[in-house]
Length: 295
Image 1 (cartoon, rainbow, N blue to C red):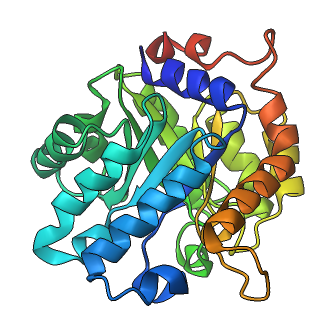
Image 2 (cartoon, rainbow, N blue to C red):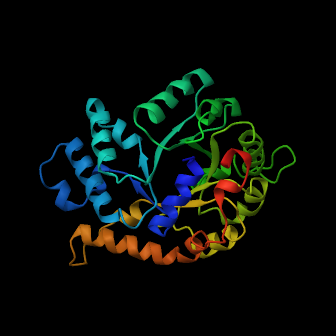
C-alpha cells in the first residue's frame, strides 16, 4: 500500500482528517499524571498511552513530537517504542522531527525514522536545498512533509516575504516542492499553519495536489471556517493536527482528564466534519490517482 493509499484508507476508516499530536510537555501534563511521583520518562509514556486510548477511534493519524522524547535523555528511544506499540495498526504515523541536514546525513535520519522506528512520514526543513529531501522520497510507502508556511508568528520574518517573483517565499517553496515530487516515487507534502489564512491561496495553488499537514488549529487559534474555504478545491488530503487542544484539561470540569480528552476529540471532529466529508464520498477526491507518484 502506498502512502497516499494508507492515508486515504485511514481517513475513511476513522471518518476524520483529525491528527492527534502527542507532545508530552512535562509542565503541562494533567495533575493525575504529574502528581503520581513518576519519572519524566514514565510520565511521558503514561500521558501518550492514555491519549492514544482516548483518541484511537477518532483520529486518522498521530504526530509525535520527537523533541519531547529526545529531552528524556538515555531513555528516549525506549519510551518512543513504548508509545508506538500502543498505536493501533492502520493509523498514519508521523515523526515530527523537523530534520534538515545535508543529503548523506539525512539518509541516516531516513534509516532511523523510517527503517528502524517504522514511521510513515516525517517533517523536514527544505531551507538548505531541496536535494536534502531526496533520501526520504525513494519509497512509495513513505512521505515527507516539508515546512512551507509555518504557524508561528516568526514565519513573517522569511516565509511571507516576496521571493523570485512569487508573492512569498512559501509560494516559491510550494512550486519547487511540486516539481521535486514529480521526480521521486515517495510522497512529498507540505506543512502549512492554520493561523496563516491570508497566505494560503497562492501557496496551495502552487502545489494543488500536495498532501497537507496542518498545525495551528486549537490552542494557536487557527480558524476552521477559513481553512475549510481554502481546502474546498485542494486535491491533496489534509491532516489537521491538534495537540494541546485535545490534551487540555479544564480544572473547572468535574470529568476526569481522560474523559475530557475523549470529549475534546469528539468536539474537534464535529468542527472538522465539513472538511472530512469531502474525503468520505465514494466519488470524491481520490489521492492515489492524483499524480504518477501517487499511483
